[in-house]
Length: 336
Ligand SMILES: [Zn+2]
Image (cartoon, rainbow, N blue to C red; front, side, top):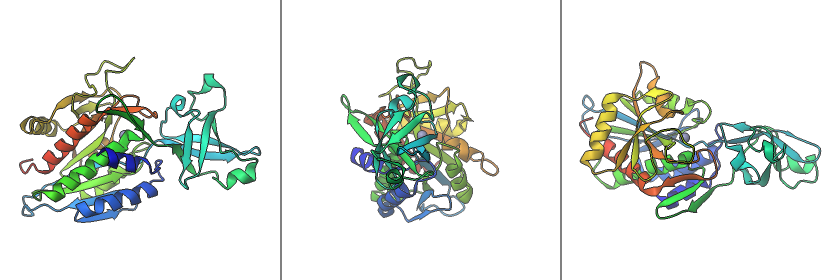
């Protein structure tokens, strides 16, 4: 799964400009599913057809978002500097003086415009692509083009890593790897929809419209969550290395309690390490899916993570494996 994660982290996909990462994920996913399509908004939707008779069959939708936080060029000035605005909530301290990459593969350096004191301020930055003037810079990118901090995955102690954009390519890697495992074993009873959604970081519209198309019985996001074992963090129980985090609530959702309890039981029955997630701030595609049409029972499997939206998003690969195993167990759960 680490190699898969590295591969999909390398492809930029700022919210609303997911075409490159969508093409990559579709290519990797295709051998593992019965059907795959890219919908009107750009979501990649893979389908695994279940074996149960139509009147007994349930629909399970899993959604991992493939977009990432980033930036958009607002103006190129006469000196060739590109002024930019944030798309979603990138951490500006982390992004400052780092290499950035445009959708066309061109590179530059992000520089805060108000000195080191202002490095934390969103929108107060330019990109220096080394251009001598406006004309040369506009050959690299024009106003309206997006860019992101260059990808990296840094090995830390043991099974831990840090990098960017782990939120939420780690969720995409988990969902792809779960589909691979399902394709190599017995076909599940229920229909499984693997959604790689767009625009989660800005509005959640991808997860919402994907759910509207299929009206699943259950909508489960696979995303990252903040933790309590970080310097200065809020009092929360989630920790790196304590296993898959099963969301009970965040600031935008109360997860379906029967679904949450079913997930606890499946983890226990399959010896999958898990922890309860009570997240004080944030939301995922679970919130988007829950409010579709007459409502969908929603939950979320989370990878515990430190330093969200920086270039040092830190996680434990053993937690990611636990999240994948729980995803597979849910797909194989004929009793849900
Ligand atoms: Zn996310």
